[in-house]
Image (cartoon, rainbow, N blue to C red; front, side, top):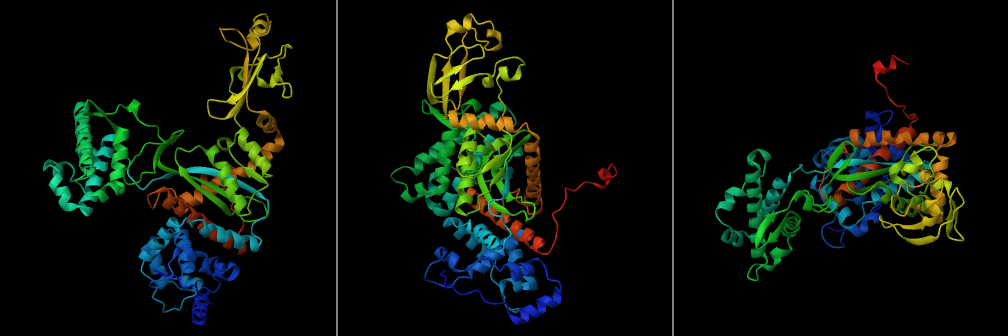
Length: 547
């Protein structure tokens, strides 16, 4: 399809008359069109389309339909029906009442173009520009971020089901591309073994029988890979995604010993961040947080939270489920800086904060507000013991002085076990052995000398200042505003269905998250313009009796 950019048409007079008759006071979409415009232009999506071929549906309309689709949690077919039949949708899209709309598959094609051209962010960024122009976002205001788990659009498989489904999926793909070649290669018994989906109830329950079946599947998979990579086999088959997935899963789940396929022990498997869980979504990962375990992804949602402005989403980050919260803060700040949406205060929970984040945020003029991790050493947990705050660190002379007056004899700046720069300094064992306060300082049986390990100066001072600050009443009042982010998560996950993936793969999952964020902004901005007040936290009727 090609794109021939056209100006956004005005709303048809007949559509206006009928819409206002049907909605005398307007509705969400009509208010949006009248007060904010339509956010998008064809030119913004020109790079997604060719200059040749049949003209495409107007991209600005498809973008807006996508947002309204997610605002109402509609399928593609339901959204296409709404374009054909609903007066308020025709009003927003500037269509004639008799317009027949488009086939629902156009929406899927449009989403694919957004993902392939890495243009997903345009759905949210164009909206933010309009909000800033209308004074709905405060410059350098307050924002808050929190994360939540996202369930992949695949079923949870045990290891035996996974390898069986991976091989079955590969055979199905090969049957579509090279049916004659495949039929000539595979043994007859494979049609029974891999013809039906692998389900737990169909698998043996005895441990030895399950291991035997796993080794059989492993041997079959290795044999198939050998046939595929044989010089006499069609070369293009090796490039199929299903074949590459089979090869990676077999490396993770099996190994060869004396030319015999062996099922890996559970202690000899890759870590969760590398482990493929399903052949149908190779980017979904298994993870757990406290009592929650899931297969899928993680979404980090950021919204404004200034008192006299609507709470609008400014950013959404989609990561693998195994990525730690602290790893995404710099990326969030970088994206916000590109959109000129950096806050002056960023409210975060403990999982997002580290000494590095405290420093990098200061360089951007951002005050990150949140509790940092406490010192977990036994000295910090024991009254009267000497924790790190009891030592005087001389950064210029590169030495530390203990409460008893002794000075370190060793100072080394290196890389810690987590890959971060740190400082290690140690006292002379001869000083520590005769110290009367030794039991308050170290429990080491060897050398009987105290060692100190801490970040470099800038990070160390920032961390100590943050720990001191979070004990104050002013901090507690300031941090109280972060609690409102739970309402955002509730709306996104519960009302708009973001908890469960519509699609497979991280790219399409991120598109779902961005479109949901834009839908939330649309609803919240319109409600704000119509005078709706921010809702208080709801309580049940029974709980209200105690008030």
